[in-house]
Length: 280
Ligand SMILES: [Zn+2]
Image 1 (cartoon, rainbow, N blue to C red):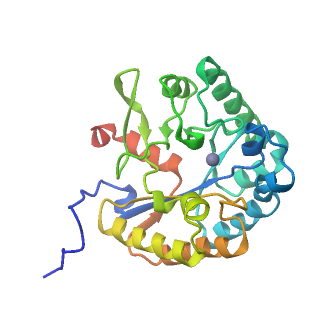
Image 2: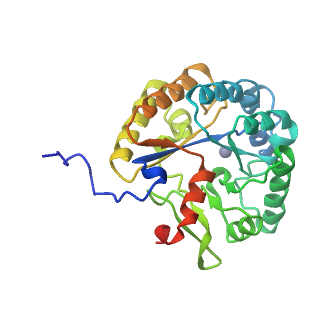
Image 3: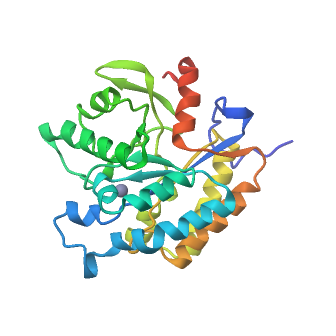
């Protein structure tokens, strides 16, 4: 008989694409100099960690993702696309999804300015890579009552900002459940490098161990793994040791039976093809 003592409450496994047992969505938050510029810092010296993302982190992670043949979702700020449009196009040409992440990573209350900022970033990213983004993740997790209605008007089909479920679910927009937009939760604090490296000062090996534990628990359970990392220096995974554990994680994940890597855009399309299955 199978031992279920370590499983916790039974999780219902949704219908994943191709009958997969587990989907893994790798999301890369570029967080280039836009972060420092948004904080009104000059992106030099101690404030140059976003520039590491441009110079070293993204090229390093593009090589790792290519070697594992993993398509990822890159959340990009409009400001970063303005200063390094060629790098954005390189990410897009490599087959990754470009999604929106604010203009200067604005993680503060935007008030009436919010629609214009969402539209500006949308226009910049669209013009830069020749394809409109359909996904958004809030910088720092901030949202307002305006956010989803404006994104939906711009054609977005998913939001990856919520932390409140194990699996995707239909978004509520202006008080009504929408069959045109899905929430793809970014739910697992230990599957984000920032808390570990900034607040916990963890070793890369410890972070890998945590990610592998999450992988196996999620694979046994609902089967939705949303990994978030940042190719910056400082709090991110841009440098060699931390990038190498992303590499090792992808290697171990690829060996798990029934696992499927996919972009958030492709997962959103899967959910919205049968919206009734994702209604709460
Ligand atoms: Zn960010």
